[in-house]
Length: 86
Image (tube, rainbow, N blue to C red; front, side, top):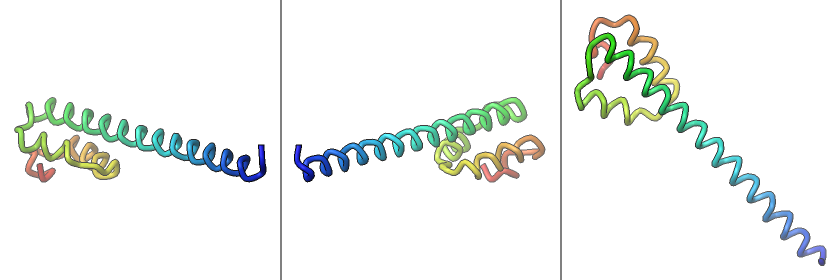
């Protein structure tokens, strides 16, 4: 194998490794989002009954772990869904 072929092979291997890492990271983030959405929804159901379709859609569209975590914490103390902005 020539030096050029070795360099190309190394570049391909590094590219594959980075792609796998990025995919794992994105999968982990997606899992965290789904888990937080589920916990938030369960809290809301236990405190206020099933949320309406609009509130459920809004929760599903949130793509920030920090925002979902904040809403989950606040959901434990607010007196209505309106206070959460849902």
